[in-house]
Length: 448
Image 1: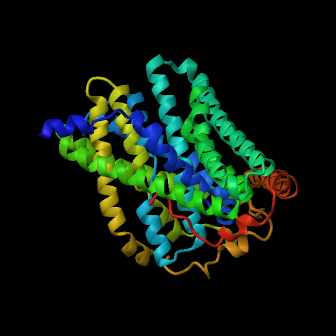
Image 2: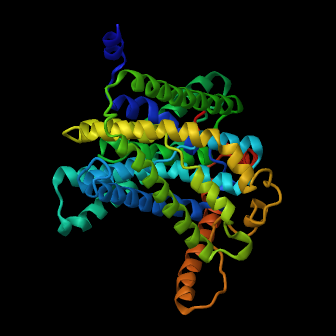
Image 3: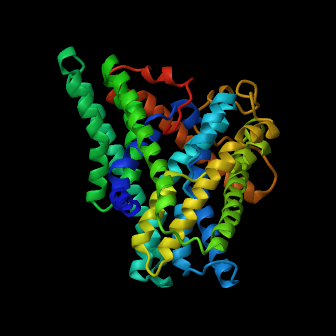
């Protein structure tokens, strides 16, 4: 009976990437509230892109050094970087739910949620790039090609997702589907566009997950307001439902897998030291990126130390790390993938149980509970000028001044994009304006 259940419940990891992860990732982008996200956009991008890269490299390097020091199971360096990439994908569903329930600062929520959304895309791109490096055995001379390949995958996937999103906005604006007898067709087309974005990117050898994420962001901002009122309600509830079901199924499968799969539990040291190294890498990610962000923010916009600690603590691992670890079983030989999969499964379960269960106590200890209305870098103070996070800040030191001048130029370009969006993109792609304002005060819940 045991073996029958194991054979019946066993399926390929492509099932995750084709049917379970797309609705989860799309809902992540689709449920973003515009104002908190874009007012902290620069900080979110810094944590998600640069921070995830730092966490991946630090984790991979420490795991490799731990193997050399005979503290844990030894893996080749590139495989350590693959493990660092997949385990750097955060999924703080439990923490975010408690954040919302207890009422934390809206900017802290936006940073945690925005980072978790974008760093999934970054982690996938890093993992696939490292997998490509391993399979083709690139040398140091080809390091430039590796960087180009990563940028090609990430930027190409982003462009595909944004393009599909804008196409859908134009279709629903001019097709006239928002009449009573065509609302079923309207809903069906809206549901099909995200999957079209995913398959388009995969067909061109890009990342479908990255593409569908940005499709969700664009469709929420531009396409959603072109739907009829009843269709808006349907698609919002539909995507929230299927993403919750998909994430619930993943955790159910994870529990059954722990019970029925033959894991490499003999490498307990690998699991133990991996957890320690992940904590160190998360700290390197959060505190270094927070330092860079605070370097260019004015005094009233700096990220305080207790919020930085909350960011560090909220780095749970979840569905994305589990799915990539499942794929590593087929990508890596000689039991290395099985060891990574066992360690990842244990890390996901332990972080969800330990960190998720102690989040309330952590928030009270850091004194970030109930400060959503009066915190000194709250949203009301950050949206007066533009939606960028970088503001000019006078400080001593010529090197810092040069850096800040460059960042000020970027800030001005961000303000220009805000004006471009308000004056041209919104009127061109949306049939009516201001529909998304009603969602600004609501805080989304990712997945479940």
